[in-house]
Length: 92
Image 1 (tube, helix red, strand yellow):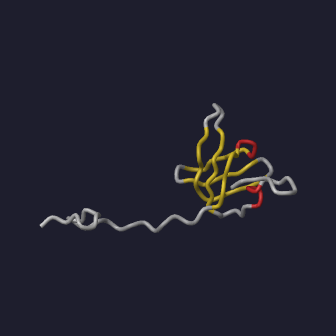
Image 2 (cartoon, one colour; image 1 turned 180 degrees about the vertical axis):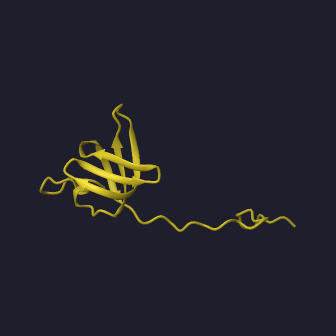
Image 3 (cartoon, one colour; image 1 turned 90 degrees about the vertical axis):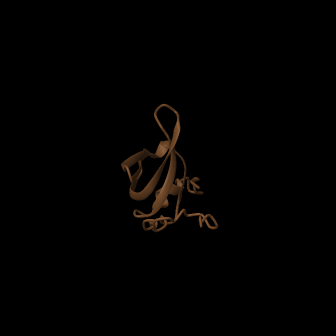
């Protein structure tokens, strides 16, 4: 999770560009939301995360929690006709 280090530096400042991260941050109206994607930029002002929906800029002061996460699982291929996806659910 994101915690200040002993030197007072936020943990997110140490994340390497290109790392997949999830960051919970505060919106202007006070609600919280998450940004999941590849860290595109990190500087004193905050982070830029390349998400599926486009780049998200998060001010450092708005970061509530965050952590590096593993890569997404590989995409599955299309299901075969008649495959219901549940074991033991086949019809005779």
